[in-house]
Amino acid sequence: MSSSTESVSASMTAESQESRSHNPLLGRSLDELTAWVVARGQPAYRGKQLYNWIYDRSARSLGEITVFPKSWRQQVADFPIGRSQVHYRSQAPDETVKYLLKLADDTVIETVGIPTKKRLTVCVSSQVGCPMACEFCATGKGGFIRNLAPHEIVDQVLQVREDFGRRVSHIVFMGMGEPLLNLDNVLAAVRSINEDLGIGQRSITISTVGIRDRIVKLARHRGQFTLAVSLHASNQPQREQLIPSAGGYPLDALIADCRDYVKLTGRRLTFEYILLAGVNDTLENAVELADLLRGFQTHVNLIPYNPINEVDFKRPDRRRIADFVAALEARHIAVSVRYSRGLEADAACGQLRALKL
Image (cartoon, rainbow, N blue to C red; front, side, top):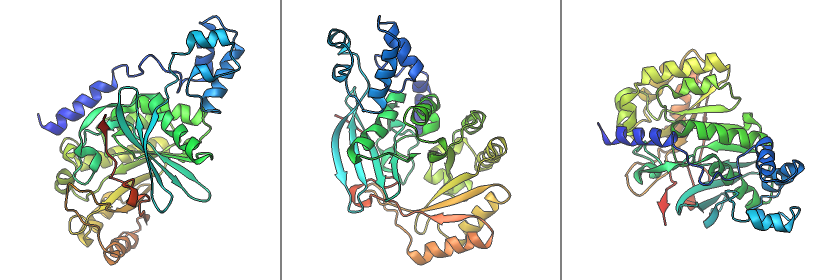
């Protein structure tokens, strides 16, 4: 068994394990919080109070919820809500902010807040590290530690909302980790982000490099979120070179599952493609990519490479990128170019890392 396959297997095993240490309250619904307070001898209306303090007022401990009786606050003061600590904060010139968040077990994840005049997008992590080991990605270079629990994902949104002092409008699961290897917890977090934080599912994007059987499983969930599949290559040998796990999931099988996803959901699917100079940015690559995607509802999101220290990949020049776009458009493939925000703060796509203190 290859090291990449072993890592993916370990991640899938971790998904089935209970990861909500002491069952934190963050991520629970109003009904669940109401049941929690009633089980501890409090009237049901305190469930709504608890819900509002957690999701509207971003409470960090039960001891600070002043509408609760002081004696009861003291009894439950040590029960965790499930908030992390900001270990480090870095802001880029474009106002994108990268956060290192310290979790209860002293592991650290990265989260990014990306503001514009009309939007505040949070790029959330779904795992501590990543088992996929993509050649161009800093996260995979550090290996995989564990899956994130639902409360640890929802907390990332609260941290950015608090820091910016404004409503979060969009969520992208494009931070550390492979979301489909932590699918149950990711879907639980999506429910909470949608229902408890009021962010519409159509404003949530889940990104994956592609995990066998998980894309169709996600389609059957019937969510309204956007699925983004990271291809990064136009043929199988090249994809295996860039994404070691791709050897167990051939490109034709992945595309077939993507076509099934569109049929089952009726929603357009996005394909992400990091452009690496002299590697996957040729006109031949563009033609191969167009042939792969012809005939179903898709959009290609081209991402010029963001540098990391461990490898020598380069970003194509603008002419090369424009030629790639033109080749796709000439073949009637919807395409756009995304220049990542936060590059100066190492907060751009592919630059996030994990560590344990």
